[in-house]
Length: 572
Image: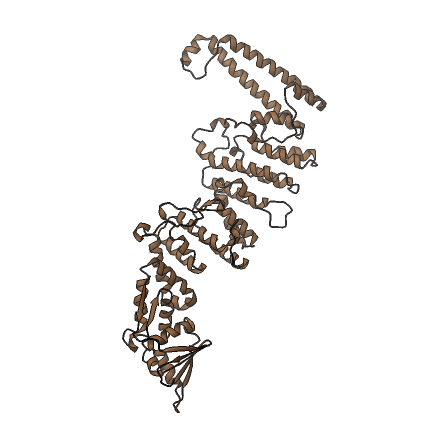
């Protein structure tokens, strides 16, 4: 820690309450009042060092030689700083430190204590010491913290900007060159987010979090301008948020917490500080910040900013974090309106980025070149289907809102519709009173052709579904059988035609069974298809044959909702 001793004399003052008296034995001829403190001093030591005091004493001197009284309420640093200045003027020993040099430098400027009023005066001395302070990270942090008390004066003297620039350059430097170690905060996880940074790049986070918000903003802005990685900026801002917005903390409790109004202001400012690059800010952190913004009634612009950021990287979100409690006037348990806006933002940003695959893409195309392009949208589709299943039991969730969320995801984003079918099934079970036309309407959200075998089996016996939908499911299952039969016929023809077999090569792909076994398999499939067709016709004629139909097709009657997570993962 940097320090400097000035003066050579021992203590020449003593205090009586709020009054300071000189012990030289000479009668005081000037009294200076600073706030509620009074200093009984002598003119000569003061006017020989301060241009301002020289002018004030001259203007206030009386012809009768009585003591004059001066008021210096506006002196930077107040009575505590003026006490040190008084000692300096009398040649008494004082110690300059990182904690008092800023106030002394500002007060010296205010009092006009330049070298014109004595060699090695306080302006030059404090300026020299400040340069030493700026060479040390810890001292610079302490000095910047003290600028809060004399902000205007420190700003005029460029002390804040010089201090910030010094800190920014050190924060961007290799920590090993500064002898800094990784942040040793014992809590590495916060709200499920890792706070650790590689290579000790987080060593400055804790010190920076000690600054008041305006100074922290100045520091972060300066660090950004020097090219620090956005990831480090995001972590530093998150670390600051952790300390200054207690409502963000799920477990931690602080003895003294700022008011909600102060936390609201801090949150709005922090949103503006977050790096704009997509994926840099953890989505879990952004969602937690958004939820806190709702609790604190933060500005509309801050909430919209967060929704946009989250929407742009919605594929990185976890389902549990999307379950945001409703803070508005809606009767729903969760804020579905907010989630809908974020889904729409994701779809919009994906389309604008030009990474949307052709709407005609099929399941067979997955795993090919388009797989990488589909990954984000497929992840969001799965996330949205899971979200719908979670909010569907809410009896206050309107059908129109459920449909809006489900339809916000493009059809090509769902290779399979098992997830949306599960959500629909949960909604129908929780809203048993909706009309048949509404049941038909909600079922239009899924494509029966894109149901897996497990989902089709469940849907075929699901009495909550409209009859038309069940018939559709069975119809498409029949088509699958026909396709399968056609494939076996093709194999059979190849086996019967040696010339085709020779053209396909010995390693033509499918392992072809003997012709006799193929014909037997085809006959079995044809017989099963005919049985299904007959049962389907009976079902259409009379819904009372439903139980017999499911029994003949070996379906077990279920009242449970279909859950794709309980099934084996379908091949795509």
